[in-house]
Image (cartoon, rainbow, N blue to C red; front, top):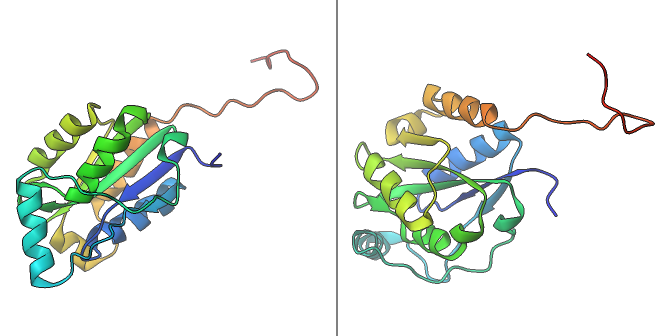
Length: 177
């Protein structure tokens, strides 16, 4: 059983989505889980295969996860935008796990197009309305630092967290005002 209530799950072909996922996991005090595939997507052929599959809504097998996403109250799912679509590994993850997940939040990294379409696709595949969404453009990620949109996303997720309830010491009565 995880000690944290939030998990950040992501796929990253070039490293941009991975960078955003690591920053989010740190700021949310969340666990991190990278989606991996048995077949490489490197190089020109990997790029072409990625855009073709994404455009056609393909799913592919994933390697075994090093976490149990169903054990978390909230899962933040990150994908790059491929061909104005959700990436194949993230589509595969959502198709396999979404029916057993709690709250979902989505984030994308993109080259200036497709985020609203990808968020709709993620919602359709998962059959969950996200509690928050974040679109990071390539220039924001390339600059590094902390994009303002990322800060707003973290704040929004922290506002949706239930309050921490502590049991009173030495008794079962509720504390007074």
